[in-house]
Amino acid sequence: MTHHFAFVMDQPSRSYTESLTIERVVMSDSSIAPTFVPVRYDLGGKPLLAALSLFPNTVRDTLAGIEEIHRGLAGKRPDAVLWATGAAKSVMGLVSSAPAFLVVEMTPLQKERMESQKEQSAVRRTFLRDANHATTAQLYDRAAHLFVGSEWVARSLRHDYAVPSEKITVVRPGVDTGHFCPATICKSRSGVVRLLVVGNDFYGNGGELLLKWAQQTRTPVPWELHLVTSDAMKVLPPGVFTHPAVQSNSPEQLRLYQTCDLLVQPACADNNSLAVVEAMATGLPVLAANTCGVCEIVSEGETGMLFAPKDFDTLAARLNTLIESPDLRREMGNAARERAVRLFDARRNIGRILTTMHEVAA
Image 1 (spheres, rainbow, N blue to C red):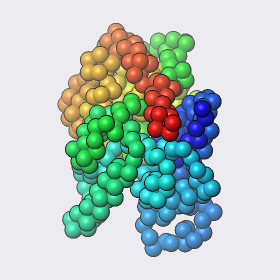
Image 2: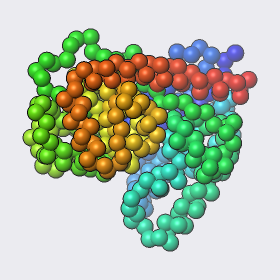
Image 3: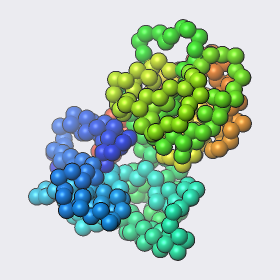
């Protein structure tokens, strides 16, 4: 039996890679007649929204996203809708029009707890938090089912929003493990250990710790630090290189994964677990801040190492250890690849989501 499913998915930054992966899997399933609704928050071609210059960019972007969703679903009567967009709570009427399945990367309360500074006053912050919490709770209540990438997020749904456990399924972040795989050729034998960092907001997500290490380390092993970020960078120490034009899921990104020796993710306030999974799939060990459920992806001492956010001493010590231990890196990299294929294969994990949607729509 064929079901008509709609897929409403954010497409800025890292979400674009995830939405393309979902689209590829769905298109290969003959039991689904799909409608894809990309949410780009694009003000181009929307002169009325672009003219609202007095409104914050976040408001204008949200309005643009709402328009894109309404336009994409106009005249459609899907059997179910997968909502992988933060704009879902702004279109409650559409969410209620068909069985709704939500992809939740992080709950709003989790985001708030992780923010170290707020621009708004305490009164305004409390007002917005309460309003946002009520709207989000209503969205979660209306959903037929919620898919989360970690037990960390599942706990927040249960404890902060009273979502019943039976409505929650943990589906690990998935990547195309056929695309993200170790190189068939050997890495450079120059003796230089190549470190890789992937993600924007470099300085806000712990990048200063890595630059401090680069300036202070006394490891005798030569190294290079490669930063994949579009952020404007300050003066960088010797041995640090930036790759601002590298796009997600591109051949250039894959080449960096395959030619580097270790992924380092010092993120303190970012749910950027996709890069960790991509690196593991290409056979890289990972050194990462233990936050946002990363400990559910990286197996400590087996596929990499973890450190507490902002703990420079532990970061530096473990980074030096991994740089100076090629056999350990090799063992961890092999284990990382095996773990990624077993737990984080996109086709298998997305298939679990589609199976649940079929069961409800039947």
